[in-house]
Amino acid sequence: MSGRRKVAFAVVHIHVLIALVLGGAAVPAFAEPARAPWSPTNIFAPVSTPAEWIFDLSRFVLTVTAAIFAVVFSLLVYAVVKFRQRRGSNGREPAQVYGSTQVELAWTVIPILIVLVLFLAAARVIASIQNAARPSNAIEVTVIGHQFWWEYRYPSLKVVTANELHIPVSDPAHPTPTFLTLLSADTDHSFWVPRLAGKTDLIPNHPNSTWMDPRETGLYLGQCAQYCGTQHAKMLLRVYVQMPDEFDRWIQEQSRPAQISDTISEGQKIFERTACINCHAVRGTAANGRFGPDLTHLMSRDTIASGAALNTPDNLRRWVKDPSVIKPGSKMPAMGLSDPDLNAVTTYLESLR
Image (tube, rainbow, N blue to C red; front, side):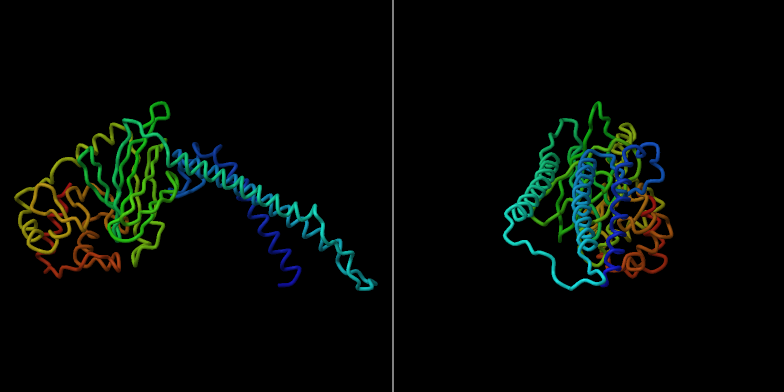
């Protein structure tokens, strides 16, 4: 790379760093009134304490590293300009400095101090998140990562659902945090909702935990952040932060058994005599599988296939007929149902609210 290209490349990086630093510094001032334009996964707009601590740490690290870059680049430009070869020069090297105790101490002690400061800052944030006090009114949720979907269990509330996590908003005056126990049913996964909390891995036989206390209601999106197989990219996360009364109403609805009517009994019979019953559970029926999502209140969810498709009758029919059309590599097999049986099963599933 030529000297001019190197300088241009470095100047571009400086502009990028300045934009990031200035943009990051402006976030807190605009986060509240500009809520609508923010992406649901924007790391620069935290609405929960753990995400806010991580964001503050990232700004601190960015500021320190930007300062280091500016100093080093300035010294490099100074050296290039001052000691460049001039016309009429005899080509001799400038005076060389050897064995300078001051220089050697500087390039040893200063980096050690910088690394120590960054280490202590990161350790403080990690410890604060991991050792946070758990109040008596905290919501407890067990998150189980599967290939390629999320299972959510509320042990004390007797609720089991999939792919769409519902939690109450936390009033700073009376905090109601949600503590998550993270487990894996197969391989490594990673739970990450950028505006609510940092990445936390789900490792087989090694429980992890995290928590969040969102201060704003709304839908927050996330993603499995650890490659876990073919459909890792479509192992999506949806967190619905609701007002306390709305959350309580959702819990009451999810606690009820499935609503079954005589008009869809044929679809239920087909469902229960095929392999569907081996993987899925529907409370109040003979279906008690654990390999796939609990379908008791399937139609109360906005999406299917872990957020890969909207939960519409057409998409649901396509999903039951051949899951690979929506999610190639899905662990759910195509059942090979005839059109009448497929229609009956789809009608039955549409009744699960």
